[in-house]
Amino acid sequence: MSHRRTMRCFIFSVILSVLSTGVPQVWADTNRVLTTSEQAASAFTLYTRLYPQETPAAGPSPHLPWEFPVDKQEVWSKRVERPSDHASIDVAFIEFEDNGSSKNPEQLQTALALIDEARESPNGAVVVVFTHGWFHGKDWSDSHFASFRQILMHLAVREEERAGAKRRVVGIYLGWKGGTGLVHQIPLLNLSTFGNRLRAAEHIGLGGAFQRAISRIVESTKRPTLDDRMNPLVVVGHSMGALMTEVALLQLLRDDGFPEVYIVGGDRAGQRILFPDLFLLLNLAADSKIAEAIRAELRKRPVAPHRRKTPYQAPLFISATSEADWATKYAYRLGKWGRVTDGNSDALVTHQLMREPNGAYCPPKPGTDFGQPWHCLREPSIKPDNKRMNSVAIDLPQRNDPRSHCHLRYHLAARLQHYEVDPFWFFKMPIDISAGHNDIFNERGSLLTMALMQVSGAIMSLSENYEENFEGKGEAECPLPKLP
Image 1 (tube, one colour):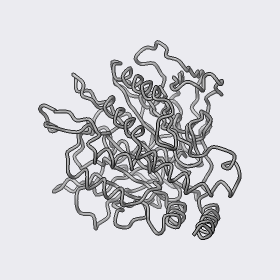
Image 2 (cartoon, rainbow, N blue to C red):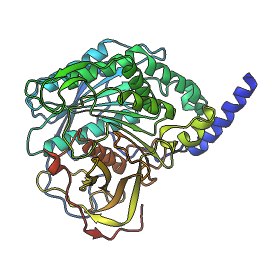
Image 3 (spheres, one colour):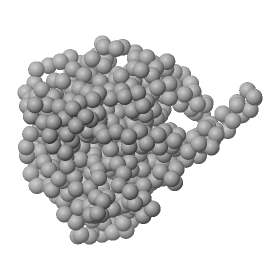
Image 4 (cartoon, rainbow, N blue to C red):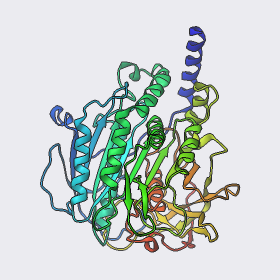
């Protein structure tokens, strides 16, 4: 038996080596290197003083994609006094051991304190949780940690551009030993750790410490306020980190682990469980049966996401998998004896994301601009009898010219065989959005994430209400170069 397992692991490693490579991370981490003592802290404040530019004209950007034009940037590893509209983001991390325990219980308390502080600010908080996957860890220099910080900076820039209240952005990075030790530095040999790291991820997701962290973050962010203020909460996971998130979500639902609240008045009146505004899982490495079980549990009880109202059934749970993610399509199936992930289960797929041949004219909104790429979200097609969103157009930038006014148009459309209204969306991402298992942080993929947050009603970027969330039908076309 041991010989067969060794041979199976070897074959699996070779296949994964060939199939799972993706495009390298393209974001440049503009944050300085931290000292040893600073890295020992469990929370940081990133202060970025941005300078606005004039409304951008068409043509190449002088800045690399997602490299913000800043004139000063500082990283603080201790709490500092700041004005309520200060251009900074707060970042905390919580680390978990392979046995499911917390590395340092005080890290959770620090993260909750950041949320409380942001909620008490005049304009409230935007909270994003991210759990990394295989080959990554909690080190400040880790590429996924760096890219997550860039996502937070992007959200902070959007808040700076808002005409109204500017909310404080808080990010919580959930770390584990997804890729540490000497073996992970050796090509091919490091792929043999897949099974071991997958079992560790499952164990952490089933552990009380991880579930407690999710539940407490939900309670701290989503508990009602006297003025009924919305404090958005989005929970994101990638690869094995998405597995941990999904396993924990199912167990919390089964054990009544989410906090409950009684809401008086309004369309959310009654006993409800507090819940994130959106779960977003990317290139999920988990058995599709877990998602099916979560869907069954959520149908048993009403949840209370406190987000912008939409005239359609907005998603609570989105699983998006790259068409080029051969790791979850083939290697996972080999390693798990024929089981399939969410994105590779035909029974689960609810939507299709397709690119149109022509470009779409997508000018930036007038007003303050900080030099970053942008997207346009168009008015959706809604089925009036059951409020199902039939389709929505999303315009994303060209990779070779991310600040051009001529964007690529994608349609996210519900599959015809899925007639029921369902807050669960499963779809594949085209290769020009995500070119592999680890290619989730390029400018096009990241803006798709922003668009999905908008569609869910969780974080509406520059918009103050639903009507402003979508920018017309966007019927004007434009020619595209023959490049992806």
